[in-house]
Amino acid sequence: MGGRPVPRRQEVVVVKELELRMQLLGGGGNCYNINDNADLLAEILVRLDGRSLAAAACVCRLWAAVARRDAVWEALCLRHFSFPSSLQSGSRIHMTTSTSTGPPLHATMPPLPPIAGPGAVAAASTSTLRLHAAATSRLGSRRRLHATVA
Amino acid sequence: MAAATDDAGDSNEMIRVVSSDGEHFEMPEAAANLSLVLRHMIEDDCADAAGIPLAVVAAKPLAKIVDYCTKHAAKSSGLTIEEAEELKRFDAEFIEVDTDMLYDLLVAADFMGVEGLSKLAVQRTADLIKGKTPEQNRETFGIVNDFTPEEEEEICKENEWAFQITKPPSRLC
Image (cartoon, each protein chain N blue to C red):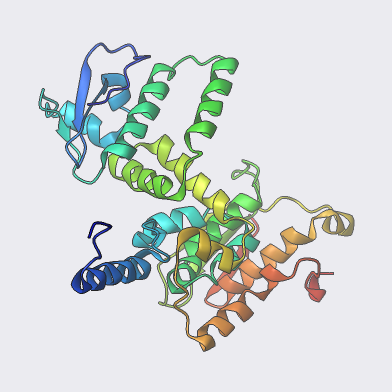
């Protein structure tokens, strides 16, 4: 008559429901859920390179929304072009919002590194150019880019 | 009861903190000052013998945070190159944790305002995401794909360039 006690039907149902809830909450019974805090997620995505960020946008709706934030792409562009600290010497690019959609943006970007000629363009890595194209086309859909040479 | 008091900073006073699950920890004041929240509490004379309650930080991540702050406070000023290297190595080992703990640290460091640890945890999480496919990221972080098939197709098309390994866009060649 000994042996392990068999769980009653009601207990089995409760355990099943708990498992399902865990799966819904965290996926696969994992409690870790990065999606609980969108602002933290944004801080994380800001540190990705362009390719990884674009791939991250395909993960789920929240990641797609956060990856679309202009601040994320701006940080990426600014970091990628590691500008020299020469704000005082020359051209500036002013970005202003042209429509009311999206968060307000009044960023003053430091000057782009000087490009000597066609040779310098060829020397720039293709990934840099591709990233720049992807980022500017994204921004360009909603924004005008005003470049003024001081 | 747990405490990380091995290499204390200049300050002799110990600050007590209490985790959400009621566990008590002690750390030197210099270490507690690395947390914005604790610093403000100390400045406002809220640090008494009963300890500062941290309602959203459980014992496990709090023990790690106390370790981190104690180590960093002890080596905060006038670092030699070797000490800086050692601290770097400590950070690298410190953040080698599973995703559950990493998330706990992210949230706790953010809540407590420990800037250095926040950056460390955010960078570590970003490193986990880098170079992965969407499916791999879903698996790592236990995320459910909630796109409709149409949405998924659209977003994948929009970000198609991320998956093209060798072919650069023709207009830039």
